[in-house]
Amino acid sequence: MSNQSTKSIYLETFGCQMNELDSELVAGSLGALGYRFTADADEADIVLYNTCSVRERAEQKVWSRLGDMKKRKRDHQPDLIVGVLGCMAERDGTDLIARMPVVDVMCGPSELDKLPELIDNAVRTKSSLAVNDPAIAIRRSAKQVALQGNASRRSSTLAAAGDSLESLDLGRMLSPVDFDGRRSAYVRITRGCNKFCTYCVVPHTRGAEIHRPPEHIIDEIKALADTGIIEITLLGQTVNHYRFEHDSAVSVDGILQPQKGRAYKGSHNRDAFAGSNTTTFADLLYRIHEEVPTIQRLRFLTSYPRDFGDDVLQVIRDCPRICRFIHVPAQTGSDRMLKMMNRGHSIAEYDEFIGRCNEFLHQPEIGRPLMLGGDIIVGFPTETDEDHELTKQLLTRTRYKNCFIFKYSPRPGTVAYDKIPDDIPDEIKKRRNNELLMMQSDISDSIAQEQVGTEFDIFVEGLSRHEHKKRGTDVKPGSGMVGITIAGSAMQSQTATLDPIAQGPTVQLSGRTDGDLIVFFNVPAVGVHSPNDYIGKIVRAKITGADKLTLAGELV
Ligand code: SAH
Ligand code: SF4
Ligand code: F3S
Image 1 (cartoon, helix red, strand yellow):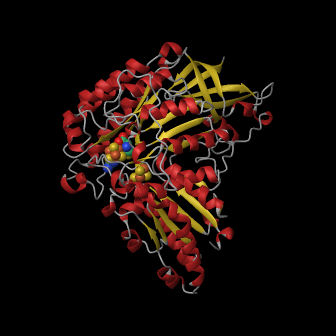
Image 2 (tube, rainbow, N blue to C red):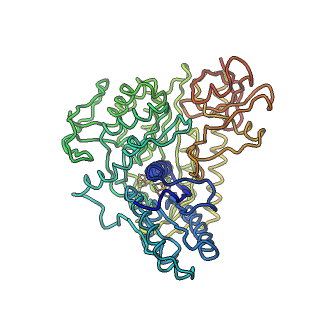
Image 3 (cartoon, protein in one colour):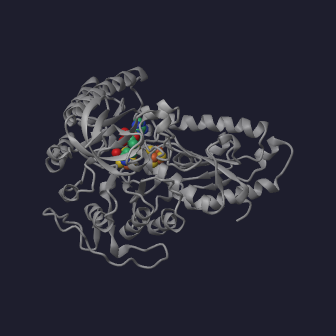
């Protein structure tokens, strides 16, 4: 490949954790080829947006960015390269280029292993097309497109397609990205989704469900642990449906995987369908816990409320480094809505699952209360006040620590978009949304209050927001890598330089409990330990106060 070493890239990420991980991996592979990353979009030669399609608003943000790039290219930077990656690229396909000719590169989430080649081609075509008239330059640039296309929801070629993408995740081990002091990382265990909830674009954009071989996952986690990572979050759209059949597995280089049996033997309720050559989600959790003990915190996102066996709950209960936090969206409290959403379970089954979670995992007496997270969609077509009332009741009885509430957004290509008119007026969606947000805020608040007086292990992430404000330093969103901006990301860079002396006698740090509660606590600015020594470590603290979603603690 040519030209890349002098080019700088600005990469901005929208959407879910899966996209954050994709951006990190793509940045790793491009960085290894000599591309430089910049946090300043204005100075970049190449601007890439890793996009999300899940709601219309997510797409609108990208359209507005592309509008700005159109001006920039026309007015002063005709050789700028603009790329749209991720779910929006896959969903809109080449229609996107027709509407926005400023886009040179499009790459769907299942094709990201091809991105370096696409960018290299774009760079080379651009330089061979040096023309004075920017309008001509924009039109003439050869578009570089790699999309999976809906037609190819792979079946027979599934394993092969999975394998070529597999190289993207595995690339992390070959050219470890600069972790820059980070202690947390995402690891994908499953790609795609087969659920086809009627409102959701994800099965259309991410393709069919593929489970990664456990050996690859564990090797990747070991490699991350070697760089100092102590917290891993396993990612999948329905993460608990992870299941790897060793018989049929083919690795990246075409060599059959060794036939590893199931690892977790503690369960009395074995899954009748899983043979000895199957690694289930419970097995995978157990293996990671046992084989990479330096990982202090093992999390997973997102759980699907159906087919979540007792074996998984038992592993979580028995393994101290697996976190007591389950993000398990219900979407609605109404059976009628659930059916129309094609969620494949009833509210009674959801309640039964939450009951089982609490029975197995809720241990406040040892500072490990189970915390639940959820997602709700309001204003799904035909939703009545009665349905909405049922959702309120669900919030009240489930008591999520946090719950994302979304207004239904019809997405072209989904069953709901094609078959069910979006008949709930926006004012009603807004009202229901606000009602649930207020309810959830009260619930989160009372859960926080209940923690006062309890001791927790806290994973220290960095300066608190308050401390940042005091110092006038930005809480940098993103994964800690230069030039990668993550919109709405929960992850914060942990690279703050502490200059305690100038700031006062104490420094306020922020961390999380294994149940994902945020805790602020003060440490002396000068003394035996520097505040920096705490970051990335696990400390014990007693909760002394609670304000809305955050807890105040004191080191014990
Ligand atoms: N796989 C996860 C969710 C992935 S999408 C699961 O099934 O739980 C994240 C969330 O976005 C969903 O849980 C849902 O609440 C919301 N969402 C998805 N499609 C949406 C749409 N069309 N309109 C509004 N919210 C949507
Ligand atoms: Fe979308 Fe449903 Fe799959 Fe979640 S399970 S990604 S909501 S289709
Ligand atoms: Fe968005 Fe794609 Fe994630 S649509 S939520 S970026 S899987």
